[in-house]
Length: 311
Image (cartoon, rainbow, N blue to C red):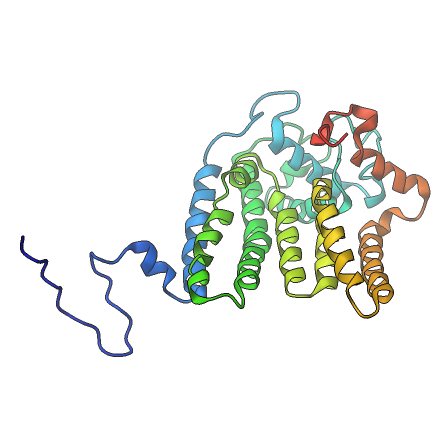
């Protein structure tokens, strides 16, 4: 059998290697700089998200609750039209039986800022009382856009931060897996389908948690604690990770020269972050309890909010 003929056209010294038929596309991408391969993977991940966003979602055109899109839209309606102290309070203007807010205050603030965007471009989509079941094309397009922007601004940078920190100090051979691990995280089908298929914002709490892990791995424990507290204050499901964060950070404090001081510093960061997020509801015990009663589903049935396995 004849040997394969080598292709001519060797590159000059110091220039980029030629891309020919013998070069694997994946190898071509991943042998570039971190910035280059992350950009390529991110573009592909965005295309997948956009493709998913083109498909239907649960509850569309299905009264009386209209599904996940209506829940997120209604929270924007409530937060942009009512005073902050009434966001978690049952009233004639805020019927908690109809998609009442049941996530921590950071989710409410996120709904408020996204609601401002909707109100600017499509005021009818967040009009108080009259927007229930509102499903215009522009409204859904804007909602899709807010999810994608949240992903790009929080989750994507957090993933890049994590893989850089995780692989720092490792051998060149081990670092060759950086791009592959980035793909596995950014193309997680569960996150894409839930967030971009059904108008959710898990990318925010997961991005904050991922960034918290990266900060702690790089010995920025106080920054990591702040970020994880923000994740907890965005979605209470982040509490599932709390024992791991607490155990790891507490163990690190005990191994320090002044463990009491280190524990106090962490405690101050945690208390300060929670106080800042919850500040509008700390003016009275009843106001704080109104929010807490929405986060813990005892009054509405123990199987709500996906915490039945914990209880």
